[in-house]
Image 1 (cartoon, rainbow, N blue to C red):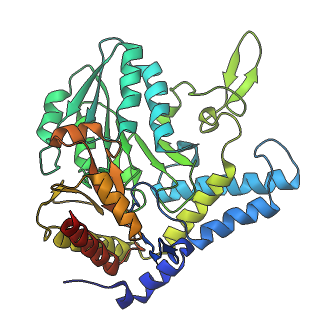
Image 2 (image 1 turned 90 degrees about the vertical axis):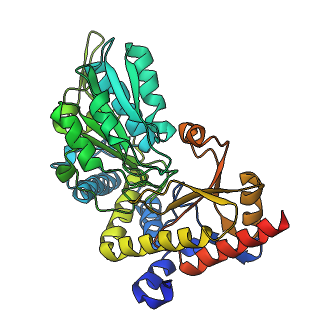
Image 3 (image 1 turned 120 degrees about the vertical axis):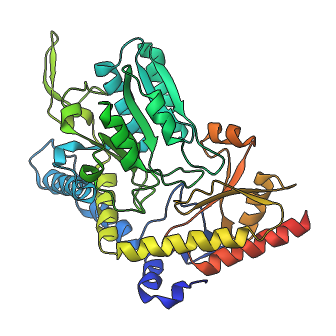
Length: 411
């Protein structure tokens, strides 16, 4: 049964918080279905960032004047908000980065330098975003290690039995996405982490597609690292988070060198700051961190169970509608999915679909979706992806369905 955002005043109010949605594109009402790439920002986040740009701009941790103190205080308050959002043990386990990509690169480099040697092995999965493949390949090449791959089936479900077979006494870390950016699969990371920990293998979780949509408890998950980006969870671009257990972060060398990450510098030797500052070289994007804190505060004020149910209804509604279109194939139909539907229509190039949908005011993603191995698995060059957030509506899904029917008839 279809649902409507107009039936729930809370969801209607949420949509009103996002001013960018209240406009026309190419003369049509703007329908934004590219949330897996980047989400839009509520007015509350925009206002918080503007406040600091207008009134309180000062470099953090470096001075005792009023502006620096105000900005430093807000920056560290945001770290505490992230700690609470993830239920990390302490703020020191929260490192600000430029995004999920940098967070994973940090672990691949620093963990690799500390713990991975020639002949060791790293495990990733076939459905990973490039950001959770390439840094590990680079590290393996540098350290002389090997990379192993957990495959998935055509339904988009990982073959968990392969994890037990792939882990050996040479395995040093396993990296897996919480939610596939292409297939929408919600991986059973609690089970995956347990399997790895039985053999004393730490686990990194790419949470870029999960953190905006689900409640995350890193202590309950018992993951060793968790990474996500601000711009996918209604915050600004250029800011991200790496959670890491203290026992690893204390032993890992710095990723970048420069200001803030030092304790004492001499030409004979430099000693390093304590965590998290050891991994935050130079002036950070403190305005971005403050904006991320505002986005988390905004999410914390919402009814999360209601939002999760609603986003699942959007996924079910879109899947039901798109399956009615002859010649349309959906890639990835795992029993546990997030709000991502990737598809192709026979005889129509994905780029043509994306361009023509844009002319109708509908924004979707087209291309290889930063997931070449997934494209190779299905033997396709490109896909179209529609991805949903809590400000999307069933009416917008209906508009996508009607637009695709029209375009199919054109071709």
